Image 1: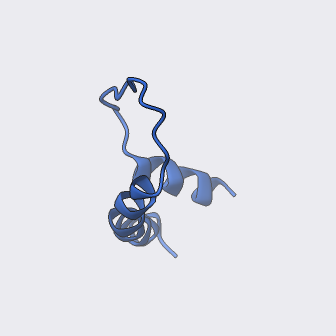
Image 2 (image 1 turned 90 degrees about the vertical axis):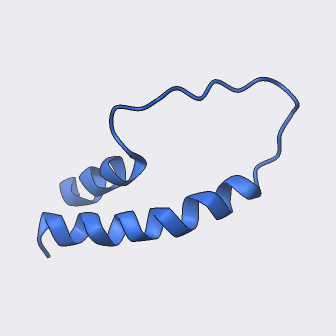
Length: 52
């Protein structure tokens, strides 16, 4: 599997999974810091999978 194909598959998965996962998280009423990332979650997961 090429790196490009792997990224596309991971990105498709993240677009569906992450919004559903965030809905199930319990909030404590505290402020959460949401910093803008320079690398996306899909890119991080792709690199981890490709490394292994």
